[in-house]
Image 1: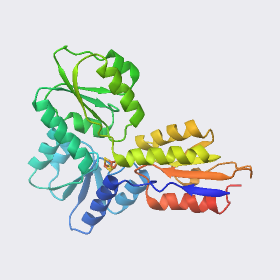
Image 2 (image 1 turned 180 degrees about the vertical axis):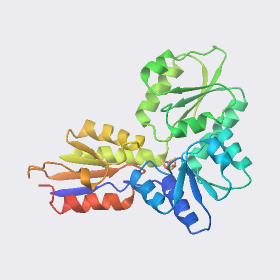
Image 3 (image 1 turned 90 degrees about the horizontal axis):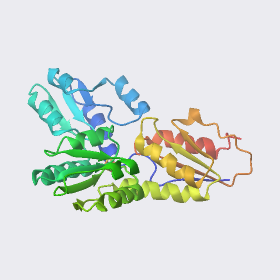
Image 4 (image 1 turned 30 degrees about the horizontal axis):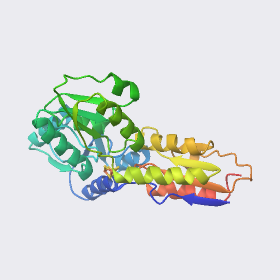
Length: 285
Ligand code: F3S
């Protein structure tokens, strides 16, 4: 039996940078806060909590802090939240927003300043999308599926600027953009899906295509892990979504020739290695 681990499994550049930032700051004196959990992974957040890192979740809380460092996670925040945090002179703000997300904020700010209606292809409840929305000074519409794209309407003279949530599925993005373009608005579109996501998804699809069993490791709250699961399941019926090695119940028959493993952008290396070692050692039979 062969175990194939995706090269792109685990932390992406932006998440690694944000998590490393928190661990670096722990060495400094004073309380450390993160604005929202630094990564969608309860193992990592739990470890940081043990080291004294506290998670705050609202601008009000940020405004009431009296000392310490507040770290912004890779997802980024809205302009308003950023201003509130920067306005609190008693704390130091370390911005770990992923540069690729920051670029979307800048694009949205620029194009909305020209009066364009902003469309974000993504999940309306996702913190990255909520943050991005907050950099527009014109109306923003979030579109996640075919129905929403078909239903979209604006004044015919409106110019549109379309961007994507960085972790959105590439072919679904193209499909939704095509549906919006069909309506005849003047449209400028930037595919802002992160390459890390594209690569991870393509590699997961390829491995799942040849695997008898596929394992996707990620936190239940991680949307990019959920998308990986969806992609792999299309290629391989026996795809399992697990959070840690403890969730592994593959019920292997012994007939399997290839087991594939991939993991979302928020899954730490040690969890991936544990799963790889466990499956490779034949403990799942
Ligand atoms: Fe950044 Fe791409 Fe990761 S946008 S946070 S490197 S998925």
